Length: 91
Image (cartoon, rainbow, N blue to C red; front, side):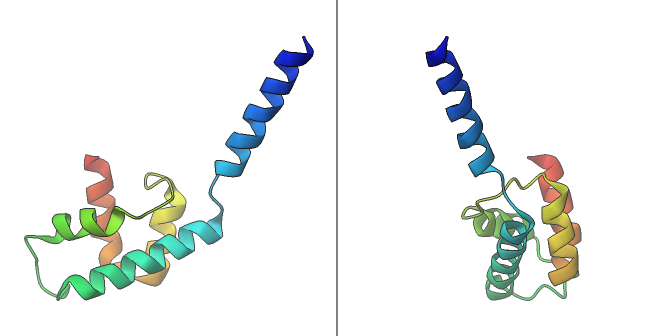
């Protein structure tokens, strides 16, 4: 019984420590915005936008489908936010 309790508590600690905070989403959004800026001109339609997003999101350490990520992008780089939302719906 004690062994099961220890395992249960350990799993809870691991899961809790893996949960991303709003600061993590803000950092991920900042990194995505910088990466997308470096990838090209975003003022016009870029047929490679999804490819660029995919490459830039490879290093993301947060749940991309979490609404906090979309909110952080909306605040930091709204021009990418719309494309990000479409991209995430497809994955």
